Amino acid sequence: MIVPTGEAEAVVASGAGRWTLPALLVVGLCFAINMVDGMDVVIMSFIAPALGRDWGIAPDAIGIVFSAGLAGMAIGGIFIAPLADRFGRRKIILTALALMSAGMVASGFAGDLTQLVLARVIVGSGIGTVLAAMAALSAEAAPAAHRDLAVGIVQAGYPLAAVFTGLATAHLLPIWGWQKLLLVAGAATVIMLPLTWAILPERKMPGATHTQEPVMQELLGSTLRTRTLLLWLAIFTGLMVLYFITSWIPKLSIEAGLSETNGIYAGALYNFGAFTGTMLMSFLSVRQPLGRIIPAFLVSAGVAMLIFASIPMSVPMTLLVAFLIGVTLQGGYNGMWPLAASVYPERRRATGIGWAMSIGRGGAVIGPLLGGYLMAAQTPLPLLFVTYCVPLALCAAAAFLIGRAEASASRRGTGMSLD
Image (cartoon, rainbow, N blue to C red; front, side, top):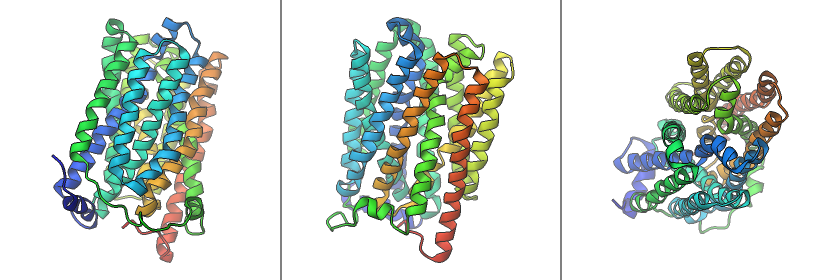
């Protein structure tokens, strides 16, 4: 169904009080789009062993493929996502889905490493755009008391899709091969285009027709500077750890003693844990500030990572710890998106989140790339995980300080309005 313009205003108006049907449709659509995002990203980690074997390429070369997609996300977040604050969420999300569709299909037809890297840049540019625009849109659609919940639930679509992607890959990869799986993922992305066109409302953005303060001058002005810089640090360090784990969890599980098939199942269980943790974080955010929830989750993730790397375990215990890493690491990190949405006013929300996401993509590029080089150098698994606990601790500290800054700004009456 197409939501009329007048009803589109009701979507946002719901942010002041109660849930409406258009608001629920928008958040549900964003959840579904985020599932497609998750499938398009994590499928590369599940097919990486087969890709490396078929093409005879080492882990550091596969790390370049991972990082190419993440570099594309930075491009999308900086150059395309901010346009959602000017031209509206709908147009930019549709553009992002078109880029993702084209890139996924091209990935399936890639004949060498260079072609695959270019295709992943295109996919990443669409994903980086749509992630920022959806976080802004879901925050604006939800009732004020449930904004953190809505943004968190949308983020849960990403790991949920990764679960099904992992299970399907474990079954279908030996039958179809990795190229056909990439084409199937591309087809699923294409399907989201007409659904988004039909469901997603369009509305005029506040202040879109007026001259606005330069972006960086506003984001780094006296009111927002501290929270913006802390947000950039948190997302940079958080994505460095998160994308190292999500990109390499099947390979790391094999290094920990699992078979290749069980390694893929470990990746699927990690992502099911990520879905569980994200939903848990989202519901906790209704009662507790994110500045407390996120650090608690991330510190727990560091403990789980060290157990995974250092203690010999049976296959069931290894899979259980992989699940717990997903609950705590991605469940905690995904709290950054509702936290980021709370920092910026509506007219700058997609821009602020897009810039934070893009700055953070530097960490996302470094994370799997560094992991590939360390594994190629045969770094012991405990030392590898200790290395990544350092940026994880920085992310937890930055999230805590953002929460304190938000509370302090609210007490002074200088916090940015969400309406």
